[in-house]
Amino acid sequence: MLSYEGIFFDEEGENLIFSLEKKHLGLVNDKLHCTFKYHPTEKELFNNLVGEYFDIYLVGYGNDNRNSAFMITLPEELKEYYINYDTDNRLKVPHITVSLSEGASANDSKDLDFKALDKPVKVRGRFGYYIKEDDKEYVSFEPYYDYAKKLY
Image (cartoon, rainbow, N blue to C red; front, top):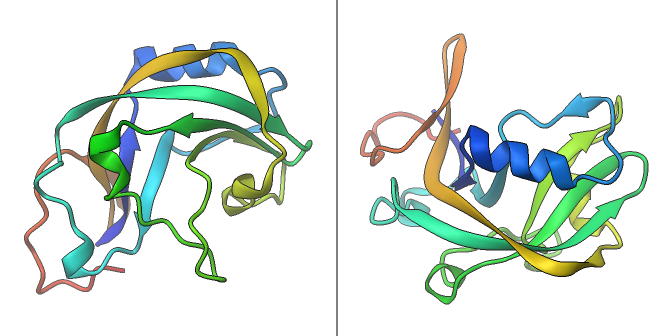
C-alpha cells in the first residue's frame, strides 16, 4: 500500500543533511525525504516523475527540541506536484524532518521557526513512493499501477 510520495535521498545526501543539522534529537526520521502527498489518491500519483532525480536546496533550519528539520526550495518543474496540505487546507512549508524527540510527530516540523542558512545547500534527491506491505516498508522508484489495492 502506498503511504506517501516525495523526494528521497540516498546515503550521500542523507549524510550531507545530517552533517548540517545543528542540534540532533534522539530519533532519526525513517527515511529522509520531503513529502509531496501523504496517502495520495489515484489522480495524485505522479508516475511520470518516479525515479527522476532533482536538485533541491536546503535554505533554512528549525529546531524546537521536539523536531529538527530543514526548509527547502523545490525546482520550478516540481512545484505543481507539491500538494502537501495541512488540515486547514494550507500548503505546508516544503521541509525535510531530520530528527525528533521521543513522542514528537514529524507532521509538526512544518510549524518550526525556520532560520535562513548562511547560503543554500544543494542536495540531489529522487522522486519515489514509500510503500508499506504486510511486514515490510520500503521506497520504490517504480511507477505505481496497482490501483486495485487500497492505497492507504
